[in-house]
Length: 200
Image (tube, rainbow, N blue to C red; front, side, top):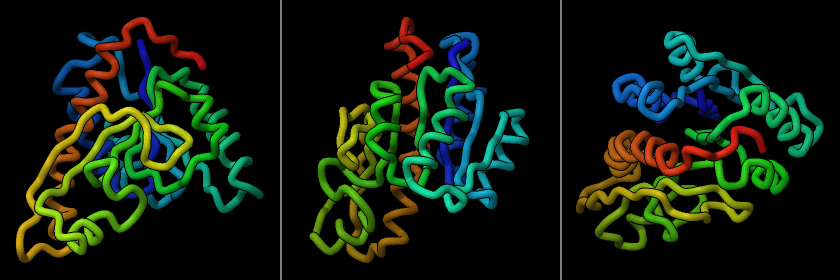
């Protein structure tokens, strides 16, 4: 069984979408894959309760208790590697990862970003799209590299920017599309890499 490890910091809505897709799509039988663990850097992340309710192992590593970003990432890697993951999925994990962490999971680290990359990497994507007069916005699933919000694009969804949109209304509409494309992209990634080693 190939393990999926998901990293979260908050509500875990993309986590929930992936777990539900795995259950409904019978990933265990069809992809030999399961969501094995959910890790968070915040003990109050609501997504932890969802994972526990679905019988998924959870772990909290508070980044504030570590002396450096490198020390936190080293501890996080040790916890993730207990599950020998086929893929590590960032689902609202609000930490910039060190190059060593990214290199350790090269080729099996996925993220979703709320813009149509390469446009608007980084933060405040929805307001920036509105301010730029964009007629369309969206979300991008991509492989993670050492450069922020770069890496091979695996899936994108496009939504219109409406005349009266605020950052909040646009974000809500983009999020509904994230919940569709992220599970699909993870499933396709697993389907296309059946012989991928679980160990880095």
